[in-house]
Image 1 (cartoon, rainbow, N blue to C red):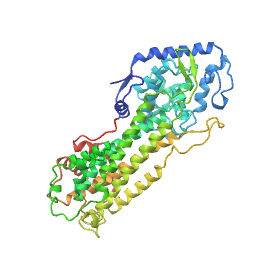
Image 2: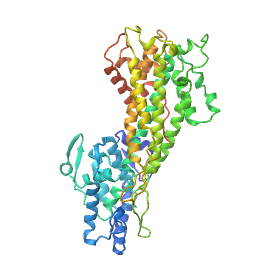
Image 3: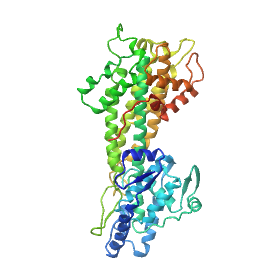
Image 4: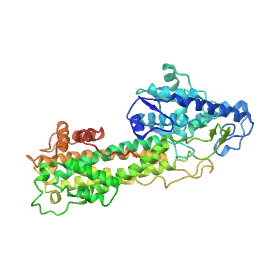
Length: 508
């Protein structure tokens, strides 16, 4: 059970929450939350117009709302903004989004009731996930549409996924014994403003990219063995003089993965090849650079996850509501674009190793990794599939953050597109995991040709895992099930775990 201290949640804790760990909010935060809600009432009593509390929203901010309509104002903003479209967001992302909103509101500057936090916690404890369409946010003024669907479900409107069964929200709340939210002054706006949808998707992308990089180091080392590549490019002295931390870390990992290999020992002398292709030789430089920028993105996202991004903010020391722009998700948009670049390059380098292995002129292995080329096509088309996936990722990697389109009658005239940039990461990592699955099979097949020589203990453990799931390819067979098995091995982290050594992470 993780205890979340508002504003002090570590990246590792967010990762654990995304992976399904149980958590609770530190109850010590409730005093500040209650004080913030009380401050809202005192601010209202002053009789002055305050954005989002007794005025309209966006372009309608100058419209004063009568006191008897304040409750309706907050309800209306939730219902009117629940205008998302598209497929439901993945449940792990929704879970992370709710946890992010909980931590944001718990910092006591949003003016919400303690009962609102209690209801959010109850939804998470009971695995009641609001059904949130994945499209409709431009990443400024907060992730309005997605968060409105969350808030509507809290009011008993819309749908809730109850442990995999989609129900009407009111029915799900009633079955769980929960009282629907009745939003008080400022609460609708507090729930809707914020970057939690974009940040949840970006964090999910970061965590998947982390596993992707770790797995690619393992499959890259195995492919190096299959091609009888050199481990000299991983010598720590090379990387120490360039000084990049990621390059140093990935080079060490590659060296550790290949340590003690009989395949490597077999061609230490008498090999007329002087240098390997870049896809083998420059792995530390490419993968290290990817690791460095993932770590930079991690710093940004950890900061954002612990921040407050709604508007206006309530400061109890002076009973003032300050209107600003913390809901603008530009930091998240930049981080998502950086993650996309890393994912694209990890897959691209992997595909080049596959292409190298199937080419007998480069790998010195049988053509397309089949014992009987011509009669059999072997790994010819899996390489084509990898190429298709890499090209698709190149198209998806175009920066989302350089785009903007005015909204709300030009009141919100510059937006971040963080939601787009973060949401695409799932498709990109899925594509790249598939490329790594193809490399895993290709590299294992290549090493089979070096029998009776074995690789290192770490890589032989990986090969054993592969062969438990997928037999060696002697003659052509229906390839799709083999690919699915291999993709599952990389996607679940089994390949990274099987190596049995410490792999670099993205923790700041």
